[in-house]
Image (cartoon, rainbow, N blue to C red):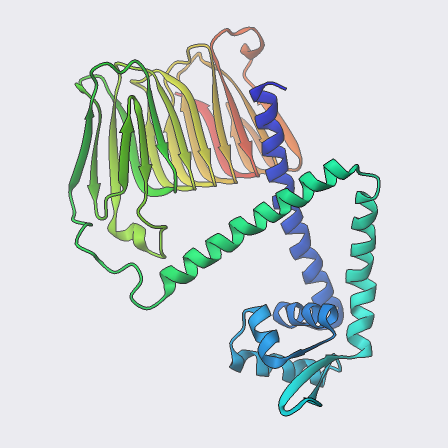
Length: 370
């Protein structure tokens, strides 16, 4: 399989995972509505169905609730006949929460049916296939747990306080000598970023930061930008970045980890590839004339995105995961599901063109010429 085909499959796996989470949320909503529960009660009910009996403290820990909140939840569940609180026979000072017939009925009717149906999907798979599926799910869970740990640590008292290395108006640059191609990579996302090509620049790049500066490493023509820590709420109010890139070399640009309020003006550059992964919101991109087939990939969901390309340049836009308010060269689509492909009139015969892909859904996205 070539790299293009592999990337399409990776996008489709990510899209299906997003759709799976969305369907799971919708199922939870339907169950909660059917049985007169809220989502927190339902989460605790699911734990109780799986465990049979737990202490109130264990239920609080597994559900992520505080001791005070779990008491309120248990009051509601007990009143509704979904749980009973009893003294632990081994330790009368400890209270056990046990499931009821109603809890087990809901579990069997809903979770049990889902479990049987999904298990049936796996029974015809070979052992190697099951190992791959298991390892992918374990790896995805590990990513989630890592993000939870990082966000929890950043939210702790004293976390993220100024350390003296985040002065305003910090500058960064690197020499151009000997470099034949440039690569700019953001590894952990960013907000309020301006990227632009500069035909007068005698360096590989020059960057200015208002607020905390990221860690930047340069190896040959590869410039890697990594935030010193993940964004906390409202960090963007106190920081911004501007990168000028030399027009003397072609550039491959990869912006990973999510971008918010990005303006990327590449009209003075030769762009070989553009990738924005992890989601994109409030971004505007100005593309140069294409040389060869230039891939532009935005994955993880896109919202409020404007992509400009030169008049006369050909392009194809593909959206997977559904689209809402998509505009391509004046063609306007409302809400569409699945995979949608739109292309300019001369795309099929063009040697130079853009292949633009939005994976994970798109909302209020415009691809136009000007």
